[in-house]
Image 1 (cartoon, rainbow, N blue to C red):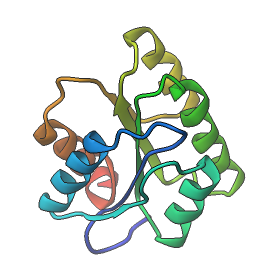
Image 2 (tube, one colour):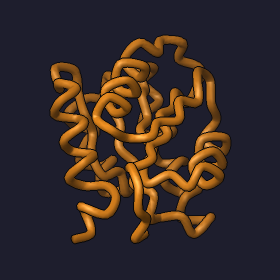
Image 3 (cartoon, rainbow, N blue to C red):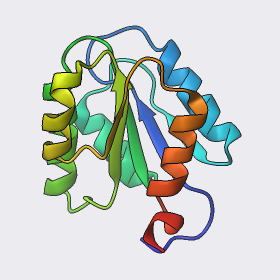
Length: 137
């Protein structure tokens, strides 16, 4: 990447889940942490999310999934990034995700999963440490 300036993160709610409070809390925390945040809103398709991330020159995509469709939705976003030669955009996420699914999501290419109880400070610090220029140094 080698980009200068603040870390750019697309925060998205894929699928049909209409509960976006957590996504908005994370988006605000990342913004308060000095990052540029693009919140895509509810009911986004994986294609819309990846298109937005590429158009916005994002460093990362943060997905919030509460619907139980995390295995399908996370996998599709990672797959589309590979197809579009945009694997440098890191994918992380959170929501109601069973512990047993986390290793498989990481095998698929998801960089990190945050489960209930994760503080906003922990999430912001992880993004700072693992995304953008500082992560490459």
